[in-house]
Length: 303
Image (tube, rainbow, N blue to C red; front, side):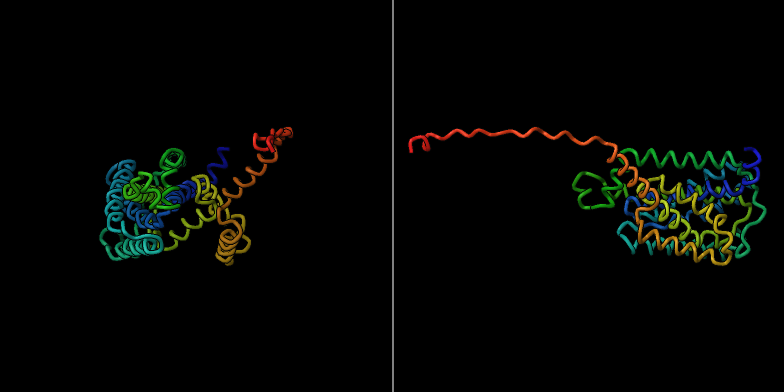
């Protein structure tokens, strides 16, 4: 067991990072908030952590990065509060491109196109697992209580949710900020695990990765993000024989899932489990047939 962990240390760290990234996308999509800004906050927190880790202890650097992203996401949510659907998605993608542009051109701080090298690789596997478990527990706790029901109501019918007394304005902002903090945590974990960071690491490819994780796993629960992250992490090993056709396989897999299983792998598992339970349930007893005796009315008796 110890040898396996030692040989696959970086692979397991990548899995933990992808789990947190997938959660950041699943949280907003379940609530119907089509935000892809977690990739941008991934980059902000990654650069913040990479720079500060050389000056202060790394846990404190991560906390500062998360606080900065929480504050910035609150402001961004207020600016984009009137946007819905595709327009919100495009607005958040524009934010991601802005973060990449700043990272490319702010050379004295970010290193420009070359990025930052020599970041202390202080993120151990137990620490990475602990942060991922903390993120999963936070999302699971939030979605198992009123937060999950409110998110479903917001996604299904926002005017109806408002009529039921749900403050959809605060809910959208809270969901947006929660997603941003999760994306920021994933970025900090990546910077301290790989030791290098470039401006394109938080670009459009990261957005595609987050969406792939959620599409494969499913958006209805945090379990889908975990399943999707596992598949995305292990799939390159399983299909390594295709080599340069890896991206084609990824694309075909996503197309197949979207067409035949839009609910994701976790949705398929839930459907199968529901069918198994229905078969195990005993048939409901049939009520014995009863004969109704009708007495003639007084008018009928007179006639």
